[in-house]
Amino acid sequence: MRLSQWLSRPGTPLSMAQPRFVTRLELLIYTLIETRKKLMSVNALAIVLTVAVNIAAAAPSFSRDIQPILQKKCQGCHQPASKMSGLDLTTFDGFSKGGKRGPAFVTDRPDESVVVRYLTAALQPRMPLGEAPLPESEIALVRDWIRDGAKNDSVAETTELRTPVYLQPPVITGSVFRPTVLKLPSPATARS
Image (cartoon, rainbow, N blue to C red; front, side):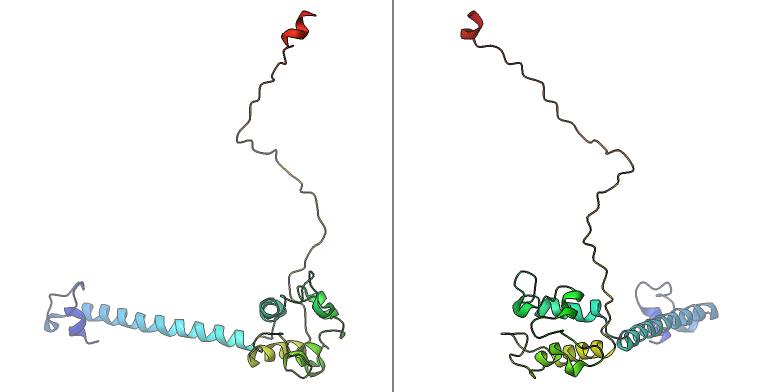
């Protein structure tokens, strides 16, 4: 954008000024504003690229990458309530334990893992059963995760129930008043 165009825009402090009357200070202010806009867009682009590269370079994570795939495509059949083929995919422990065909994956050897063989149709029936096959990118994520050691990075689940300890008395926000009702003897029993 040229200086004359910028100055003629409505709302600029110098919208009525002509370019020939521009002082050096006004030119410096204009240059700083335009430079700042360019730097902000360059910085934003650099930040986005840095984050994208870090995410792409990060090793696959069970909780971030694998578990959402299992929840979306597999847990309908492989959950504690139904456990098709004896397989529970709701937890890492159930996934690593496997089902009737043995452990679901062999750490560091994705092509020998039962889960990859079912996903790629090396074993029949292809999984997920009755649905479209997983995209190759998701199968590659599972393979990479197994190749990288199949680590469990999910939040530990606690099965222990503890009684809460209250450090302050409860706040009473209201009360119910119920007067006691005296039961009067009936007139028939009062005479005798």
